[in-house]
Image (cartoon, rainbow, N blue to C red; front, side, top):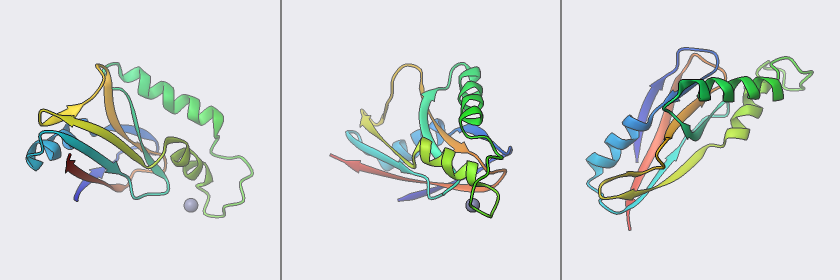
Length: 131
Ligand code: ZN
């Protein structure tokens, strides 16, 4: 398992990590298989979505803010309950296929670390399995 380091720079942002994960796949030497990506965090998650038009990521963050406002009478006393909820909505793992030594993604798909309580140093764990 490879541990990628991701430094986020905003309180909430989607960081495109597609190239870093592609590099892990390439260096693994696996030609056909599975790439499993896991975010070991409770206030950050992972999502696959469009990485061509950056306004898509902005829209996702805007909608999540409407759904889960920062102040909402939460019971979690640390003050970041909204970040926990958003991370759960995104999920913590993504599995992708590896074909011909590269991630098999849809035309517009990119993989994002979804930061909801940054900026912070985050990790993304990647395991590439031949099968
Ligand atoms: Zn918390």
